[in-house]
Length: 264
Image (tube, rainbow, N blue to C red):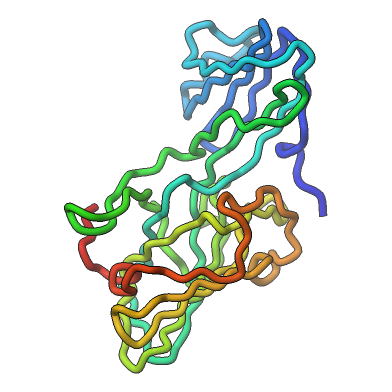
């Protein structure tokens, strides 16, 4: 299975430009005067490009220098650069020794890589749908995160998520002898790849296991492929923090999965 055309390598000669659409985000890329110039536009901001022979000078340009012979570029979907906070559609109590799988749609950031002296370099990444900030932790100690707008679902329904959402499947297992409330999940995405399966973006599957006590470590196991029918997808982007089989969370599980200190 090959990736769709939007992820293919492109060529821009000096003086040429392109418009690339990624859901609510449009990226305008101009190659001129030995520079890459990029303007991120959202929604109706791109109306100024209708019938335009050249993009307007007053776009919110961001600029990078390039070599005279540098003409190649490509786009890639990536995960946000911060952890995300995920919630189910309604609070769910996980029974003792039970497990449940959830589908989560995380809006992709679109990364632009372009040639600089003949080698691909990362220029920047822009959110396909601007996220909301949220705080996870206490008022004096915690982590700045993004909040996922759509709720975790028990079934995959394509219409529930935006075009540029990365569908992540998360299996949560309660290995303890008491029920666990699932109202919010602090989820790090640095070890997840991005795949494409029939035009839809997916990540590799993750399994999270909680221990018996609040202060026990929580293990996260990463599969190499997406879950279910999407297992045949083609990998577009490698994990930002590298591939690992297993990761341990140093925070207590009560601050990882639950409702403590939700300052958002």
